[in-house]
Length: 344
Image (cartoon, rainbow, N blue to C red; front, side):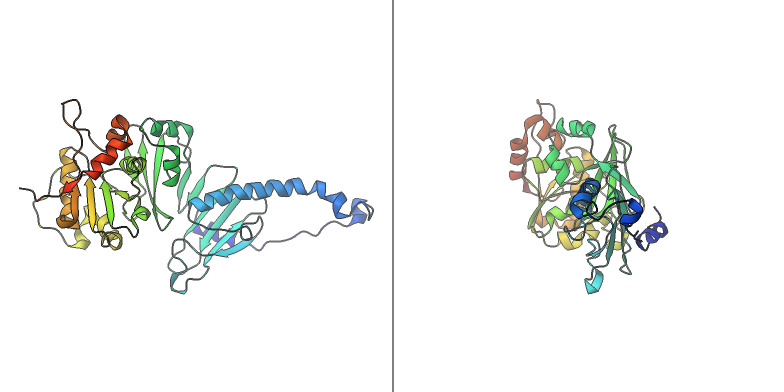
């Protein structure tokens, strides 16, 4: 929905309708008393409140925090924007309107440099944020992840959703400070794409805030797999691995396009003293580990060694170990990581 349309809704002046008089309704004063009239009103109000509760849950997914007094059908509220935190003034710049029927809500931040806006619906699984249409993950994808050793609880904690109207497309939501900042899609046949024009971030960024040790993996499913083994301090790179290690000198930060996500997350990574690289076992995975170590500093990097598989090579990645050997085996792999060595 265009910003102009959102503005019209948010700035709409709410009108009220006067209650019809007892004379026109043909009601006596006795019959008009609140106790006699309440049964005709309360069911509708309760239904609206129930819808509003569903909406409130969706708001929480997006980082919008409301209390009971601010999330009432028909009411406008001014809240702290989870994206800009109110700017320098830290004011309540997010205008939220829950429609009278409780079936939808719209919001927009009026902070000059923000403008974050969106809409959610109670009777529809659709959530529209900055033009990204998502819905809660369905049973088909829940089963898909369960077959890979990943629980529904882990999916919910990481905000894994699906593309609205398409049950075969996984939506990995990228968040920073709880706010949706990007989305990467994956089909069942492993086709990937991301929302255009969005800044590149590490997946799971909020899980490494203020932690001294982190794990970096090569894909979102590997990040979820690490969580099943008890490691929340894990992030995934947002894009694929290179075919080979570059022979060129490291480019300047502003020209390091393929690894811009590292520079975007610099304030998080600078705090870390130990980085475990758990990229894929293949040549591109090893090349990615080297490129990451070159940029992050090899002195603080460790590397995992994936276990052998039937004498014919090694397991490919974190999810394959989780699926075939279980969470304890994956935990052991991380615990046995070795100091990263210079390439010969």
